[in-house]
Image (cartoon, rainbow, N blue to C red; front, side):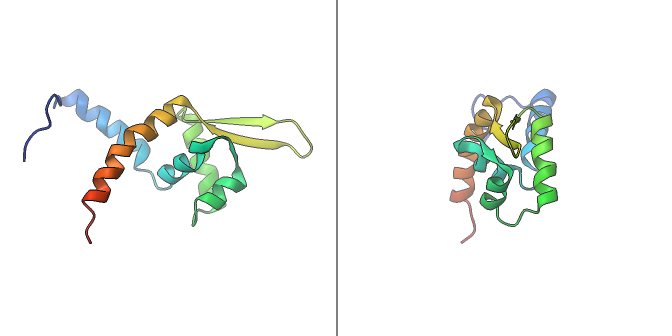
Length: 111
């Protein structure tokens, strides 16, 4: 196995990778981020775009992503009140960073 060029392997780089995996490795996070990639969405839209996720899980993940600064929650004062969730620039950057990983995964999937 060869080392990727210009890839520092030290304790700090390992911590950075672990931090990223701590975010993206949580179940449902990837599909939720992808669902939000095309603009602000309401809860029910996320639920429809992420098949199999329960309402409590979606609520929890949206809150966690909001706490990490990856999703912004906006309350629209109307009757009834509307709440939308929008990806932050940091989330958009994360999605872009994950694209090479998704391509790698596709090339190395077992048939």
